[in-house]
Image (tube, rainbow, N blue to C red; front, side, top):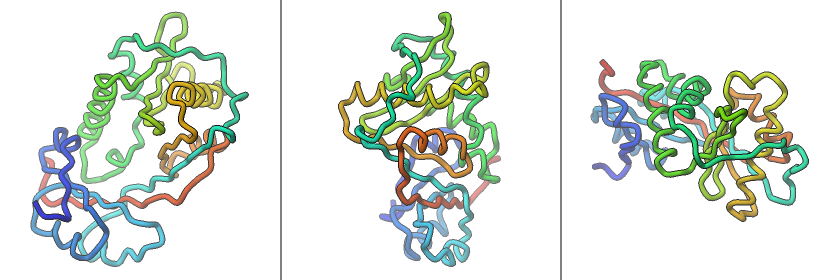
Length: 226
């Protein structure tokens, strides 16, 4: 395969097309995707000239910001009285995930059918469960939230719809961050959030997180999903 096209098998298993991530933003890399069937993504600095993307048929999909927090800046006192469990029913986690993650970049990609975007996120969460990277939050024995982490990376955080909108988002997120700091011993934690989700950004900023420059993500499709 061309040096500019990196296959992404975790995506291609969900779609009827091959999937690739461009290894760099350059005309040579964009040109490499011209005659290949598949779904392509490329990450671009927000201030970069986007003319080449338009020339080669790439379209905007999302932006990912990078909130980060050092342990000594984390507002631990915001954490609620939350305990996490390693034992849970995977179906309970998947039910919350399917309902909570409807605004991702693949759902926003007009070329990708929603049911395929749903499948992508479901399979990702299954992978995290299989890798034992998820901790569950329970109320009265029922799973009401979860978070996934790996080393310094906060991967996912979600609450059941029954407990959303009740002022619990910040205490829950703070409890997740506190748990991850304690389990990993890391001095810094990092996550990624789209600006299209300002509520989550505000929650993390309210816990002592700061923002690094993000990346704009562009997609292109050669072929059909049907």
